[in-house]
Image (cartoon, rainbow, N blue to C red; front, side, top):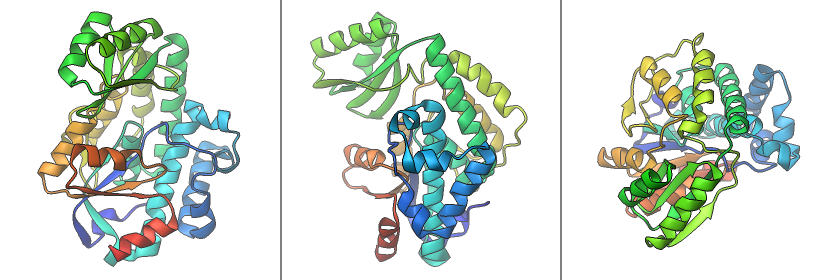
Length: 319
């Protein structure tokens, strides 16, 4: 299965955004499955690639099983890919917005691999499932936690991280930054953040300290997982989580996805890169509205829509 985003004819100044872990919910993508043969084919292909009925878990639960990292990651990827396929089916090449860049938040960067043709859908699904398994295993080996800090700048949080031995894992906006580490050091860091003026701190319901050195066992396993895969050059540049710069070669993409598992997701930097190069319309493709809401916090003049069902897809034609 291939995607045709590079051949679409409309949509200068558009960027595609793919969500990461945490947006999963039982039933997501069900309307796409029922309404779109193209979307349905994605779910079937992912199920076949994984050798298990992942779509049944996505549509019917149970919720606690869907939250497991090994299930949540390929599930979100499958829904996002199904949505792209439904967009191609419903809009056609004339009305399908053509992105100048694509970017995915953490897991979403893997969704971008399939959409831009770096890997095929089956390869991507198997790689994402293995990534989820490796991360879950790393969480058990090196338990940790994460928390969002609102209202402190990156420099202040870097100082707090040095003092406590924690890590900055996500710079989502100028005032929404996620830290990680073992449970005790994260608690200490949050106390310091509050003392230094944070507006709010929010412990996150995650299995471990993602995008930190505690994920090193997962990185080592991921190197083995990608060693046998051939990474093609992306049809559309992928703006990298680690650097906020575009990836145009398959070799660059391979290095990026290995590095990002232990490296901070520089989401604001990625968004700033696209904004400075004329992207003013962002299409968040997949479950949830997390990335769309971040767009408005980063640049109020930019527009952002969330596309996760047929109605939202058809609304793109009107715009």
